[in-house]
Length: 463
Ligand code: TTP
Ligand code: MG
Ligand code: MG
Image 1 (cartoon, rainbow, N blue to C red):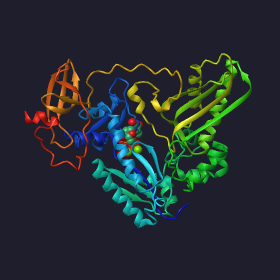
Image 2: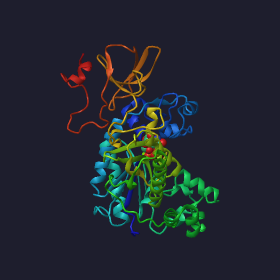
Image 3: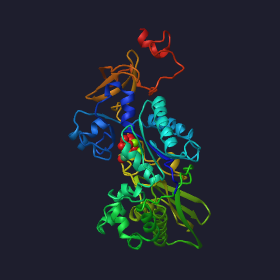
Image 4: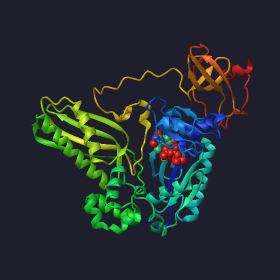
């Protein structure tokens, strides 16, 4: 392990909610909840103001509304979050070629590999400059953790939240980790956490005290061994730049094509178990389960299913693989079967991007590599959804504050305007149309913000 805190972990603060507050001046300093607004919707995230009411990610939306009835409830605008994520990742890549994104709002950076930092002082400086740059470019805050390992850098950024920076000095790691829950460690998902709790192990200290042999007995060789090392704060995992490398899969080719459907099913279950073994051994969990089938005629199919959150649970992977197999025609026989998990995280997080689809699975285009995959039909969205960008022919840009009973309420404000006024229209008012998201930070090339005579975007102001 290195001796200087030169692994940086960045995580944006209340990411989706902060973006919405930056875009919508009337929501700044207010309780904001972003998530699925349908009957089975869940909270994606809540602003820090909303968290004081107890609202948090993954909570059913109904419960959030009871806890914080006056909060603003908004649908996610993924396109905007993705664009800001790219700006943040670009700033990270200026610090080092070794940047490992974990999600839209989060990444590891190896500062030493980039020559940006070599000791505590230079690391701290780089972290502070990064935070300032992120604020200047995106208008948002992020928290930075610095440590000598990935595991501790992530813990440090969590402790720095919100809008902070924390350094964990090499040598102090074990004392810090000891009292923390086992779920703090990478590779301890809900399933492993339950398993350990039943064995009476709830803290990292108890994990270390249990000893390596006991952990291997409880969790198997690879996983037990890896977890024991983590409990002692030994974490040598490198920061890995390629996301593509982040999948784990196993496959078998059969000498004789298998025709028996039951036998194919058993083989898939066996492969799923082996795949989870590899996954756990690497201290990983993943969201996307992939099934590969090569048929007697060498035609090869891939089917995938993306779960709501990363898993390291063999039962979950087995079930998903079995569901995928159901959709594959194997008459004629198969000569190769494979099971893989991608969309990996080195920790387990209830990730609920999928809730917007109101189903337990969601497929995103790049994850579905199959010929002839049948996409679920697009849900018929209500015309106006709270949080959505709109533009009115006369009043200009705004966002939907609410709709119902044939009316839609729009607040007319932009990221650079003061809090705006609300107006109500008929839902089919021809002057109202879906709008484009506006940049959170004004383009530095542009002059003072304000009406630009003759500029089409400001026609309303001129009128
Ligand atoms: P997080 O970084 O876990 O949370 P956060 O950025 O909202 O708040 P914090 O300051 O504690 O980091 O997740 C980043 C985004 O991912 C979050 O804004 C919304 C989305 N997300 C979900 O959609 N579902 C989830 O369960 C979680 C945890 C996050
Ligand atoms: Mg975050
Ligand atoms: Mg995050």
